[in-house]
Figure 1 (spheres, rainbow, N blue to C red):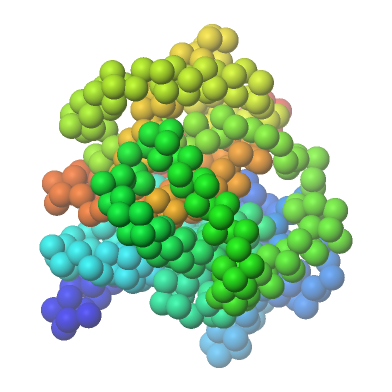
Figure 2 (cartoon, rainbow, N blue to C red):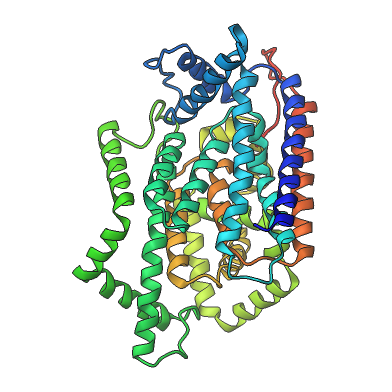
Amino acid sequence: MERSAAYGFSAVMSGAFLLSCLLFAAVNRVQRGPYMDEAFHVPQARAYCQGRFLQWDPMITTLPGLYLVSVGIVKPVAWLCGWTGSVVCSTGMLRFINLLFSAGNLYLLYLLLSKIHQKNKAVSGFQRMLSTLTLAMFPTLYFFTFLYYTDPGSVFFTLFAYLMCLYGNHKTSVLLGFCGFMFRQTNIVWTVFCAGNIVAEKLNEAWKTELQKKKDEKISSRKGSFSDWMRILQFLIKYLTSPKNLVTLTALTWPYIILVAGFCVFVFINGGIVVGDRSSHEACLHFPQLFYFLSFAVFFSFPHLVTPSKIKKFLLSLRKHPVQYSLITAISLFLIWKFTYVHKYLLADNRHYTFYVWRKVFQRHELVKYLLVPVYIFSCWSFADTLKSKPIFWILMYFVCLLAVTVPQKLLEFRYFILPFLIYRLNIPFPSLYRQLLELAFYIAVNAITLYVFLNKTFQWPNSDEIQRFMW
């Protein structure tokens, strides 16, 4: 990093941290006690602070990564500062851990953008810093900076693992991936993603050699025609059934294989991926979750994904391939018809924005979920179109991981979309400065509205004196 860029980034990071501290103070002044899931997380962390490591709240469904890290930070600081009593492991002190994770995420996002786009010399240092700040303020993630939730820490360790993978430090990547897994079990998918980066790189090298051998450079692996996909499928089968290639891939990815094998042992012994309350977190084939995620991605990336040129390009594609789109539409309608699930929490908890999205949109009429299929198809096309600069096997690997992390989830919860969105956003080409500024302004506006609503627009349930607040 050049000296001027280093100074600029230091100023951005310091300014963002100062702003977050001011907002953190405002949130803690208004909501002093644990709220929502904090009612489970905070007492569990306090039990760990008091050395009661065998005590476990059965309502908690994630592993104790957040509590172990919290104790590892809070206890030494309390000892150095001479703090005792209720200050140690107080709600505010525990929430501050996520403020530290948020600062770490900002730095990791900058390093990832610099690494992924290092060959793009047209991108200025200012644009990198702007994109970093934008992604660090991604509303669904930024909101939980101020509460004691697993999301900031989960994102921190997963992004750190991805960064180490890109730098070829795979043992460190696996160690960090394990830490991410301890925050949220589904993060094992992103460990597979890191291993998939290595596999995709080897596949792309072999695929280029295959094309050169056949002197078939005119055939693009990204055209998307049926013959192209059949050729890629045949190549994949041939490559992955070769003992020599399998030995090579195993030698390159063995640290990840060990962690995934350990995860499989955990699932077998535990009887499932969820710890604690399993009744509310049952896995299922909820294919519309993919449609919800794509719509979510288009909403938060509309400056890049919903442009006049993209809409025009999509309509041309629609006219050029009517049979393919008709088939995709039919499949989408079938998946919505047979595989739509509505979780009891989605219908019951009016503190979450998803409650109102479902009630105001999907529950208006039985046909609404089918009428949204054109929106889903455009979202999928636009989403994939922005990834066309990536190698074909990287794209396939990312979509496999995206399916694995979204489809089994029965509950529509925007927090589950944070990591797949960030990894997608990190890997698309840098947009124009105007679109970057528009995206940042949009994120700032959404954060301002959601935090204002959380702090000021409270309500109460019947037969309850507790103050309720709206949140993601």
